[in-house]
Structures are given as C-alpha cells and as structure tokens.
Image (tube, rainbow, N blue to C red; front, side, top):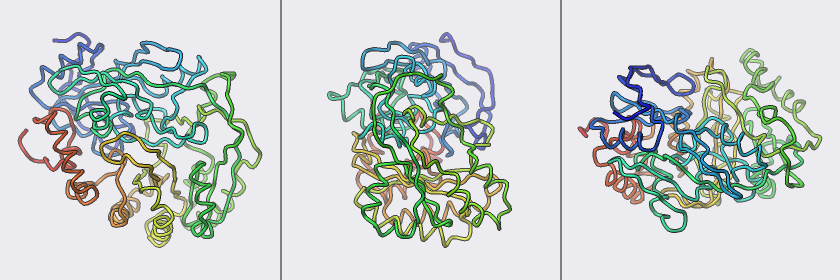
Length: 443
C-alpha cells in the first residue's frame, strides 16, 4: 500500500455540501509516486477531488473510493518568471506565496479555493484581464504539467511541443489523467485605479460602444432592476506587496447580498434598485490584481448558484438582449439576481478554443432554491437553443445529446479521445458518465 494513504470510510461533499455521499475510502497521496500507485493499482473507479468547488454532480463518485489531492500541495520552486507547484495546492495558497515575491499568475479564477489541478482540467472563469490583458484562467498559464494517466503512467506535457494532449487535458475533468505537478507562468503583481459606474441596462443592450467597453472591464447586469454596474480599471501599473495578503481578499457576502437576503421578496426590486446606485464606489481607488480573489466559506452561505455558458465573441450583441429579456420575463428569476459578463481569450483547448464571452447568472439567496431550480432548467434550454456552449463544471443537467447538439463532430472526437486514454473510465464521476453517454454501462 502506498504511503500517505488513509483507507477509512468517509462522507465526502462539494464545497457547499449539497452534493454529498458516503465512500468506503478516501485515498490521500502525499507524493507523485503515491498517486501513481493508487491510480495504477486500482481495479475500481475513482473520484478525483481537488477544491471541490463544482456545484454539479462532478462530485458524485462513480465507485466507492475517492482521491483527495490536498496533500500534493507543495510549492516546489518559485523562479524568476514561473512557479512549480503540486496539483493539489489551492489558488489561495499559491497566490499567498507568490504575493510575498511580488508575483502572480497572469489570470486566475475569481474564486480563491479551487485547486491548481482542477483549474487546469476544467474550464474556469477568469475575469481579470483589465489587469493583465489577454490573460485567461490558470489553464492559460501552464508551461508544463506532470500528469498521472489512468494506467498509472507519469507523463510530462510541455506547452509548445505537446499542445494537442494539453488541449485535451484542459477539457478532460481528470478523465485524461490527474495533474500531479504543474509549472505555471508568473508576472509582476499589478494594480490599477478602479471605480464603478451604474448605467441603465436597456440602452446598453443597443449600444455597441458600451458593450465593447463592458467586455474590457468587469460588468454585472441586473435584468429586473434595469441597470448594470461596470467596474472600470485605469492606469494599470506594477505593484508592490505593501499590505498583508489576507487583508486584500474579499468576501462573497457583500452589503448588497446581505440586504437582498434580508428584504421581503415583494420589496426587493424597488429597494435594491436604489441600493445598487448608492453602494457603488465612484471614486477611483488603487486596487491590486490579487484583490479579485474571493474566499468562499464551505457552509453554504456564499450564494445559491451560478450558471455559466459562453458564446463566440461575435454573438454577444445578438444574444445578450435575448438573455436579458428571458430573465426579465421569467417568473422564477429572482429580482436581486445578476448576470456576470466576462471575456475569455483564445486558448489551446479541445472544445472552445476561440475568443468568447461567458455569461453567468448568479443567485444569492438559498431560500430561493425551488424557484431558481425551475428557472435553471428553463434557462438551460433557452440558452442552448441560442447556440451557447456550457462550462461543464458550472452547469448542471447536461447530457451527451446536449453536448452533441452543441459541438457536433467535435464532441464525438472529444469523447473518443477521452475513452481512448481511459477505456474503463477509471477516473471520473457520475456527471461525466452522463456527459459521455456511458451512464449505466458496465466499465
């Protein structure tokens, strides 16, 4: 038996606790050799757990055992312009270490809690391009990765020479292998002068100039309040780590969220329309890139849910008015909910490799769960009909037929490539079985 492995039974769950199950063993590798032995020797199916941030059934195990990657969290080396880390380290831990050196990942997810391995193997949001133009999430910073394949083999993939297998890895959800270690590009810590603007939403939907400006910033749309908030970044410049790291992190339960939860449902739209206007920061304030990181609690208090799909950037002007109109008209779309809009740049991925706009409805109040669930299913059907692509780790209820309708022959090639590497589906989840169309089949 490999060292560092705990074979005791346990109850595992995702970060909010709404996807939970009992397993016979949680396997905790401490070294790459441990990980190779666990995966290579396994004759059953394994669930790979990183930061456990997904709201989907990616956390539902296909078998009776799970791998907890949190022990592979070493910072192996911090170089002049790169960092080498274990695949189980979280973005929070990595960012804290780099901050002390005046460095950062070019782009990262807004959430601080995913693991590096999970951020590489699943599409993740990265709305930080005002600080570092052209930067995507962590997967876009990969220079090389050591990956343990389902047969236990350790392979090392390098950007520039192994672009095809890296592209598949970025859309694999660990089915193509588990990231044991990664070398990532770093850049100097950046800051900018940031202020917020409130604009009426309806004119924005017909204004190409404002839409283009919104995609260069961080923009939040409030369909039922008929307004938007644009966080504008100006005068980007280098920054020094001159404040305690933890003092820069933001929490998810902002005054707006707390107020939205406290108000009676009937009063929300009227009160919040005023509250958003009063709550913005119109004065330019110097902010560091690192201040985009939000640390989310695991008690379910952060927010209810989010739904992320994306369009090719040329579809934004046509799709956005339809999406806003759908949300406004839907009786179960909460009045306080917003839609986050952010741009993703071209990246070497198997599925969506072009420049895109991600559109992310967010709901804050757990008390709204039944209504949100009805809206969620209707929204999925509507936005798929518009020709959008799903962020699988952030979108529930996606089937193999949905994927084939979105991607056509590209989906079949993706499925074939994953099953070629992992024909027994040793690494995966019930969610991935559904997406691959293998649910219910004997491995």
